[in-house]
Amino acid sequence: MASTLDSQKFASKNAVTMYDFDPGATTAADVGWVDLRDYEGIHISVMHSVGTGAISTFKILGNSASDGSGADVELKASTPTTADAVGDTVHLEVTAAELAALGTDLRYVSASLSLATATDECVVTYVRYDSKRAAADLTSNVIA
Image 1 (spheres, rainbow, N blue to C red):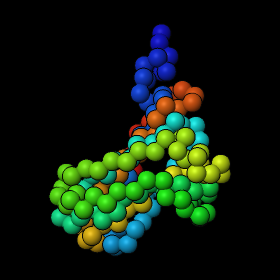
Image 2 (spheres, one colour; image 1 turned 120 degrees about the horizontal axis):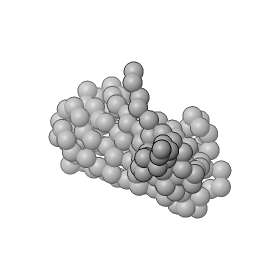
Image 3 (spheres, rainbow, N blue to C red; image 1 turned 90 degrees about the horizontal axis):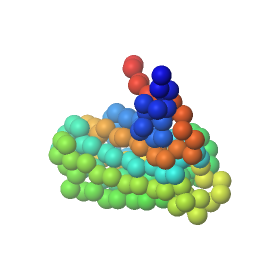
């Protein structure tokens, strides 16, 4: 009988998390802090899901604290002002090597977004890839 790891080619090496980003404001907000310690990098995708205002800023931040309470370090940034329609997507990626080059205490990352219109919304997908140790269900179902 095959083990779970034998049947999970993607989910045992990558952790995918999706967020409903509905800040209700136009100021920049962090989406969700995740640990990058055991991964080779992270790819973050943002899809405009409600509204017609632009995604004003999209950054990947690094931090030494798991809740982002330490000093933020900007790792990558984009100003996708044409991402102003439902279904528009923008992407950024940071490798663990890029994170480590900016500080040995940096371990956590988060997308930081601002929207031009407070009533707009986005879906944000994190893909932490190439786990250093394969494990069952790194990507798991989330049912609210």
